[in-house]
Image 1 (spheres, rainbow, N blue to C red):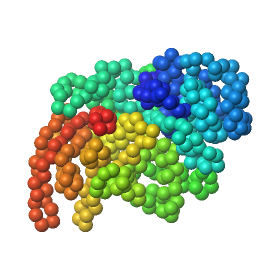
Image 2 (spheres, rainbow, N blue to C red):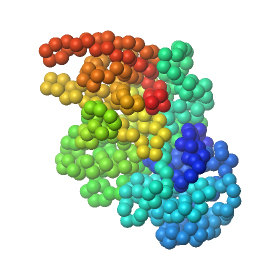
Image 3 (spheres, rainbow, N blue to C red):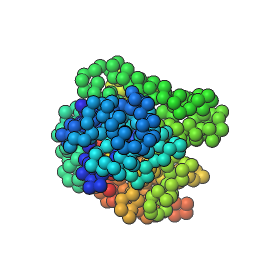
Image 4 (spheres, rainbow, N blue to C red):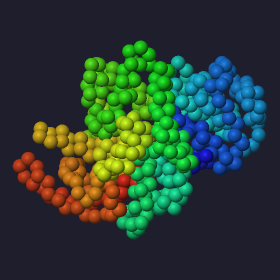
Length: 452
């Protein structure tokens, strides 16, 4: 099994008043495999039941009778739920939605029994109010595609992964390991982090086999649409699914997504894709104060894909073109895509903070900072740039208007921290901007969340 970061699982398991854990995330990101890996690492006996194979159990769960529920599970699996050091795993729980409501009673009557529930398209079940959710009686955790650090471990590059974990600003960073990490990052950009694809890459599959694995996932996501949309809505969803990869990293104008559709219809299909975990929305925040969430404008947003490998495949990028491409990969849409998914997967919260960016639209020019994160009582802008060159005018505008003193730049250069002094031309005068710039290579994007 591929290595995964099991920090969230271990934290949950060690909690004194442990509640059932509901594992959320898009299809095929490895939720079931992660649970099995966790049980193995912790030395737990795993009692696993795939509820898609037992849809009739929904009636049993609906009874909310814990004794009957556990007896039926024992009958279906041939395993006792009374033994010590046991983990009960309810997989594909979306097939029996009443199992989610029953988690409350399992928690109250069998609190010593650790339970994890997971399923595909679970967000659609959780938004269905036809049954009572066990509010306050369950915990949530999110799983995403393999992060870059997990990809390194899957590749056997343990030293490089540990190097990422040990990173501290202003500490010496050897050039050889910097080049090695840039090389591995290039592979990750193409392969992505979907577990099945990474496993194929690790096992030595050639590019056609890797692309076939990616194609199968892309088609599977498309096939799922019929489960939560029909008729005209299904057609809109399929069109948006194919169109949005070309708009990643750009401020979304609804007319560019589906030119002949009403805005409300376009917003609806974008909501569905976000709910399915296929896209991440990054909302504009005015950044006028704390908390950051308070200044979000949910009408203004960019989108990024679930996974950089799938995004590249949907855009038709072949390995041959990738090898021959002389353009720096650490700039533009793909670099921002990588940062977005690293920032999402680095969150270890039951309620992941929405990603934000800053946009100031003017008559002659706009200022835009790619991402903004909150660090204690400060708002920190994060710019994704390449190399030594490249304008930082938008970043300077943010520092001036928001009176910020610290910024992060992600690109291709080795880590450094420097004091920046530059002049910014305003409408009728020039001001000098001073701030501390923390420059990190792109592959350290996840450390932004860790450091905060």
